[in-house]
Image (tube, rainbow, N blue to C red; front, side, top):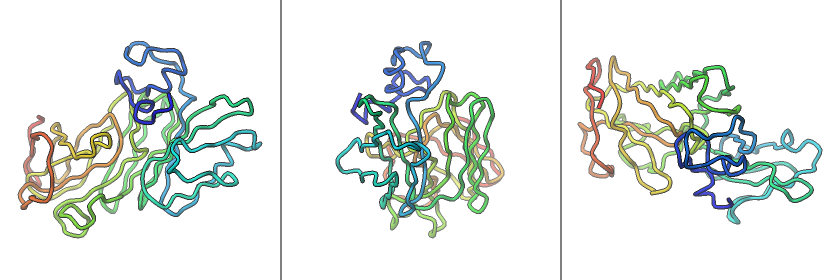
Amino acid sequence: MNNPLDSLFDADGDGIVNLVEYMAGTDPLDPTDRPNTDDILKDLIGEVNAPIDLSDMNPMGEYTIMPLMASYPEVVGNMLDLSEPGAYLYNVYNANGSLVYRLRVSITSELFAAGSFTPGAPLTLEELSIGIAIQLRADAALREIPIGIGNTPYEPASAVSYDDGNGFEFDLLPYGLALAQPAIISVNFDKEAPIVQRYDANENTWKNITDFTVADCLVTFSTQELGKFRIYSEAKDTADVPVVASGGSGGGCFIASAEF
């Protein structure tokens, strides 16, 4: 289970990734067979060039924290300094060389809002200046998880950016977090005919989210996996905005769309 593309994929869609099911001895292909706890995968979120202190995870210094990929920066003195946005994976070993857990560090260019999900308690996190909110049900996950709203544009000069007024990209952290129950996302958007998309990191392309509603300038959709999203107006020339698969478009501001 050292392949990052496989180990953090939720093959059966039960909100528990393959690595956790493998370590717990449950079937990663059976959504009815899942662990009762998840103490194998841990998440941290942050911004570029803002060093992350891992001392709380290694207070006695008995663990060895190793990057899963040779291209990832190494941990030096329990400090991790990441200068590029993205998801970074680290294995944490005990003194016997056994895997204790895997650490995923999600880094965004700018972290607008941050909170923490605790199992058994619903969470609502809002970014008020842009108007983005994420709601997690009390049973969304089995472990405590930091949740963040940020931005890391893949195409800073394209039509989908913060400054051209037609649409914008935003991050919901941690990248690739699989949820047992879908999160509800709401975004203020006052343009006509919105297109809602999620970036598929495995296929390196944007894919349409076709189930969404629009009412009173608020676009609402659900997702069972966090990551990078964008919303833009279909009404504008979008020749430079690739679209994968046909998707639904709702009405504009104050016009309620059907749920596709």
